[in-house]
Length: 240
Image: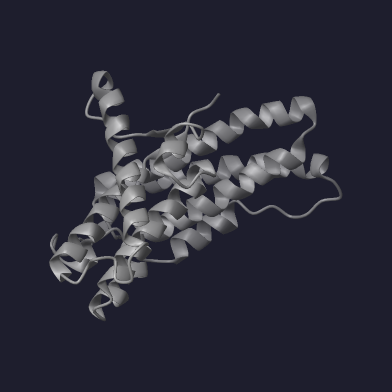
């Protein structure tokens, strides 16, 4: 029985984001086939597989789900990229089908949502990296670590680690606006949230203790990073 680590709606949104990224790979496969640039396409495919598996580990309690996805999308080595290419395209199609099956089965998954005010309710990536530091009283280190998690997520999505560059040069787009006519406001809100975290990270790094000795203030910074991570789950790079 699948157990969710976050609300069903957020799980669906995150998986839908990985499906869109995979569909973009299908389009790029046609370009690779036309131009013969198979190696470039394999590089993008490998990154998609890794990022999707990592996302699944933050969504489901069972690690087998991410491992099964990795197995489904694996391809055997062949004598050349050209001969490997059709097998890899088929593996991509199977992976997309497998992800759609996950979303179709979300109604049967069990939500395991903790107290909304507890450390355990933080985004799984923030909780796993920061909770022990926080519980040990190393509040500044916990907050700094949470900011680094955001930086790493931005880099994984766009190759840029600051909010300004991720949304600028990186062409990052976040799904989740309440309506199409307010999407620009939503994009700006997430952009400035990540930029604020950039500024806080720079400010905190210039003092020995980050000016954080209050556990409540530290928790509020962790919650800020958690919000950013949840929003970035719906992130993808816009096609040129």
